[in-house]
Structures are given as structure tokens and as C-alpha cells.
Length: 109
Image 1: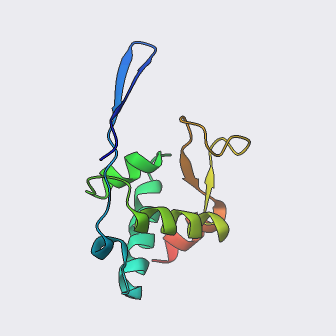
Image 2: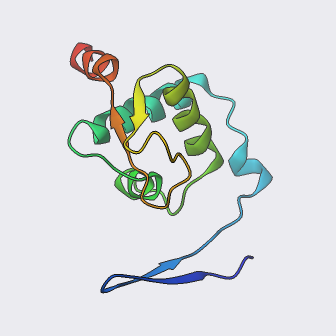
Image 3: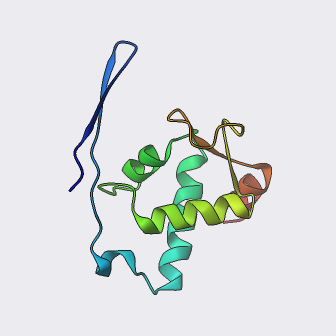
């Protein structure tokens, strides 16, 4: 298991833990599960702009999973969500928000 990262950001102390997924957990064949994850991500982003780890926490996940990464990538590609810092997609401060298309999708559910 990778070592945790320690950072001091302003007056805050941040610890990042990395977990590995089992092969079983990373292969989800259920399309309805993927749809449910998409809907749940859209629902949490209705209220706030969140980072990927904050989204995972809001969804009661222990960490950012492969399924979450794939679903986030799909939502970005279909322009349902967008970066809050589009010029720096890998920024540690990056968060995600719903686009107008995402808000319309959420209102129809």
C-alpha cells in the first residue's frame, strides 16, 4: 500500500491516504449501478462544487474508486459536469460543478 502524503496548506494540515482496489471491486458489470452512481453524483453536485474526494465522502465511499473515476470522466465528456478550474484539470484545488445541461438533467429526475 502506498505511503500517505502529508501537506500543510495555509493553517490546515492535510493527509492523503491511498488505497488499492481488489480486482473484484473494480469490475462492475451492472449498468444500473453505473446509472445510479451517475445520478448520485449529479445529486450531490446540485448543492455544492466538490472535489472528487469530497464527492466520494458524500457518497459514503471510503476512497475514490475506479468506478467513481470512470463515471466522473464520462460526466465530463458528456458535459454534464465541468471543472471549476478548467485551465488546470490536475490542480489539487480542482472541484467539479454541474453544467447547465447537468442542472436540466437533474430537474427532470
